[in-house]
Length: 125
Image 1 (cartoon, rainbow, N blue to C red):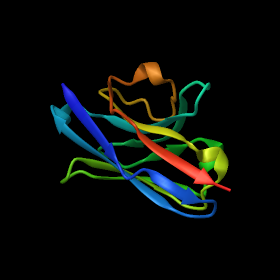
Image 2: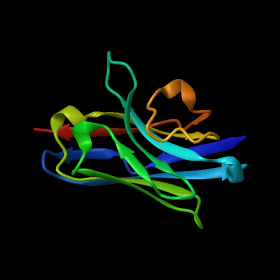
Image 3: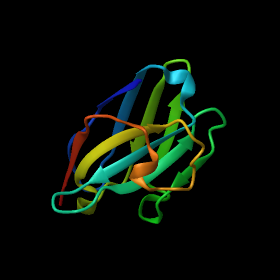
Image 4: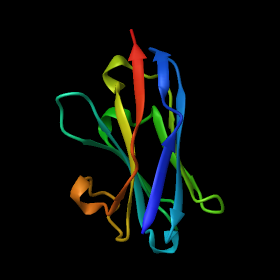
């Protein structure tokens, strides 16, 4: 089993920045891909970004390219999402997820084995 705990959410004005963190514990040696998803009220969970845990290759949804950066610190078993130039439409609960398969480029939530509890990001206009 892998446990994931997110932190770093909050309230920010449009144009501001936040950095989310996701600490992984447990059987982390089996992780191949990690990702960030978000879910706004009344909407489906949406893929945001993913990273190959060993190689560091990244993949983003078009709406965040150039504004968000996904990264990881293998020594700390921690995943990050640096979010710049935030917009009101970025408001959502953000979740980190881990998969034991190489699924970089595939954004379906069902492909991920483990999920965190989520952290709220609210962007005011």
